Length: 139
Ligand SMILES: *[C@@H]1O[C@H](CO)[C@@H](O)[C@H](O)[C@H]1NC(C)=O
Ligand SMILES: *[C@@H]1O[C@H](CO)[C@@H](O)[C@H](O)[C@H]1NC(C)=O
Ligand SMILES: *[C@@H]1O[C@H](CO)[C@@H](O)[C@H](O)[C@H]1NC(C)=O
Ligand SMILES: *[C@@H]1O[C@H](CO)[C@@H](O)[C@H](O)[C@H]1NC(C)=O
Ligand SMILES: *[C@@H]1O[C@H](CO)[C@@H](O)[C@H](O)[C@H]1NC(C)=O
Image (tube, rainbow, N blue to C red; front, side, top):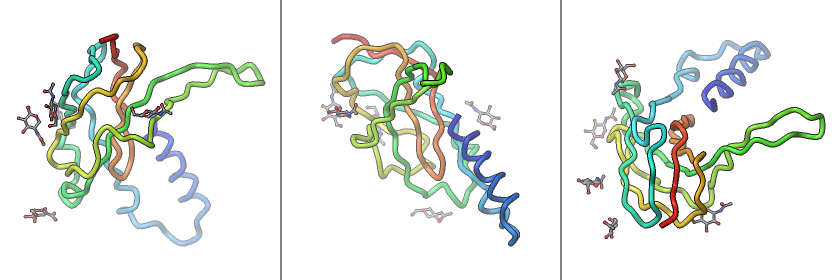
């Protein structure tokens, strides 16, 4: 979702820019998160390993550091009556950061957050990529 947003923004930037953009700037990193998978259940205080597919990371970016952020989807109506989905990313307390993207995994401790079944983790390198939704249960 974020990747699509970024691509849209870049497409507009390319269209609006008079100077040609180098292809490198479009070379965004979007490794797919392979764990958690949909409907996984995490329990606060547990250690978990978040994994992603490193074959999608261009070699020049494998040493870049990443950040993992917890969020959850909520859907609310805006004042025009349109449904809006928010990711509610907790950027102030990343689950993990300064790990190497090319490692393909990072260990985290599940924080003590309210139970919900719409949690996601988003991996930020040069771009963000959300996992499927999973659940954090009551301890
Ligand atoms: C989780 O990992 C942390 C940091 O590596 C460690 O200190 C802690 O003992 C682990 N907790 C469990 C429940 O394994
Ligand atoms: C990782 O990505 C590559 C290239 O897109 C794909 O061929 C492969 O099946 C993926 N592996 C996993 C475990 O998703
Ligand atoms: C990544 O880091 C490793 C170890 O520090 C180094 O051997 C390798 O050449 C680096 N790769 C790139 C593409 O910078
Ligand atoms: C972010 O996470 C920290 C640690 O789990 C928590 O104390 C804080 O309330 C969270 N913030 C939001 C906006 O959810
Ligand atoms: C993550 O935890 C697993 C299992 O406890 C351990 O084998 C692995 O070395 C840890 N990885 C990192 C990057 O700390």
